Length: 166
Image (cartoon, rainbow, N blue to C red; front, side, top):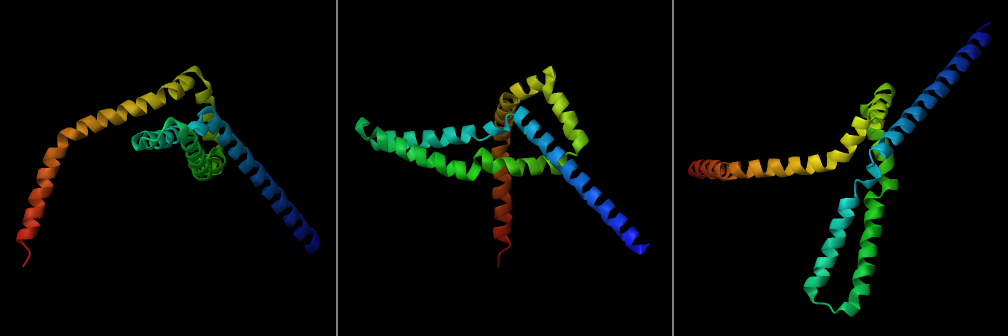
C-alpha cells in the first residue's frame, strides 16, 4: 500500500511540475507578446543613432577627406556590432521577459495585452515616446530654475562645514 501511495504522490508532483512549467511558459509567451506590441525591440534604436552620430561628428571634426568615408563606415559597423552584443534585442529580450513576468502575473499580463491591443492602448504606444521626451524637457526646464538656489545652498553648507574644521 505504501508503494501505491508513493507512486501517487510522485505522479501528483510530476503533474504539478508540468502544470507549473506550462504556466511559466504561457506567462513568458504573454510577456513576449506584450513586448512585441510595445515595440520593445526598438528601445535601443536611439542609442544606435547617437553612436552613429558621434562617429560621424568625430569624422567631420577630423577634417578627413571624403575618400576616407569607408573608414567611418567600418567603424560605425564595428560600433553597431558592439552595441548588438551589449543591448541587441536577442540580449535584452530574455531579461525583459523575466522583468515583466516578475512584476506582472499571468492574469495581469493578459489584461495588459488586451489594453495595448485596444485603440486606446495603440494610441498610448504611439504617443508615449513623444510624451516621455516632452515630460523630460519640461522637467529639465523647471529644474533649471532651482539650480541657482540649490548651488547657493550647497555653497552655504560648504562654508559652514569649512568653518567647523579645526
